[in-house]
Image 1 (cartoon, rainbow, N blue to C red):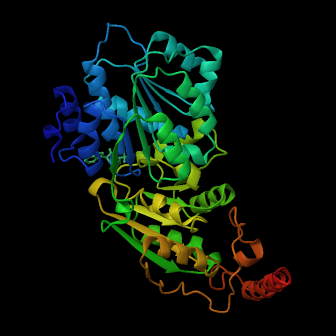
Image 2 (tube, protein in one colour; image 1 turned 90 degrees about the horizontal axis):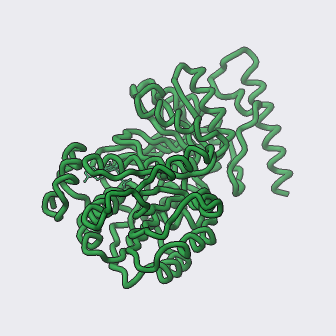
Image 3 (tube, rainbow, N blue to C red; image 1 turned 90 degrees about the vertical axis):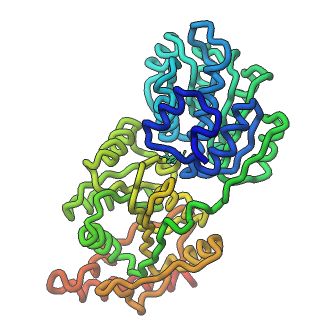
Length: 429
Ligand code: AMP
């Protein structure tokens, strides 16, 4: 179905045209007419399905249709779990609202509150916010939400995972009870149903295929490889494949930092993005990556949540996630909205169980391809991965990385292997 068939205004169609969109995605086809009609909506849709435009376009149209009074006051509130998502959603609102007179502001923590207060004072129509900082503004009395007509909860499951439920309930209390509410969530739990019950009024329901993002257009492959040779293999693949833009996932912030530094040393421009980095550093890293200044972005799961990078061709799982569902979120960064993408997982012996969990979730096996020269050493025994992320490999184990890089290195590697295996035996006992 074309955008032009969905009943959108000329200004909005002009904006979608400018983006080069013609066909509406399934979630857009369903959500746009329902929201335009004024219904509350409960939608099951993940990042990558086009959900942001699915709620932003009709929301803008409703603002356009309702009374404006010529003054800016907050009439739409979009709550999101992370700063990155807040920045991206507000960018989408600006993109789709390019030919409309509305002002949008974004509110999140980790940055000075004063510029946000100044913007709110100047008057805005649409606020995109993370719950914590929004509450901060409410407590200070620097924001008025009593004229909100539409509330959107985006990635509601993530907000609950991140412990925002009390904040969300406090915010709901400050909103007018007659309003339109839209709830988007990738997954549904008892808590989400409870929240939807309290928040939504006879909602229309939408469910777009849950694992649609792992569909045909994303090719998935596993390369079995020893843990201590992953970095070398990654550099080799990026260089040999001439990959210009690749997002790499690690389980820990520590490894994200270290891997990024090592890739730099291999001559690959790289940056790490994770929760310990300042907002300015995260925004800069993402901007550099998007405009091709940085070739490799190394990220942890939390930092990458909701990242919207158009046409990302390669995603690498340097380490598999502890939670199988995160695999789906990670590889959803590639092959977005009809583009082809490739998801590569470098899997060492320790991660076999995690891989089995993922394959169970996907209900299919992922193809395994051993890269010549990087065959796993069969003598290495698995060490179970403890929850909360693995530790980086010790220096001693890394010494065996390259085939005989320095005289004596093999002997050191052998020593370290028997040493670490000895430790494992003791731990197992
Ligand atoms: P989202 O699921 O909202 O994160 O959107 C995923 C990506 O799809 C974003 O990069 C959008 O710019 C893009 N997108 C959204 N709607 C369409 C569409 N109808 N056609 C092509 N791309 C789209």
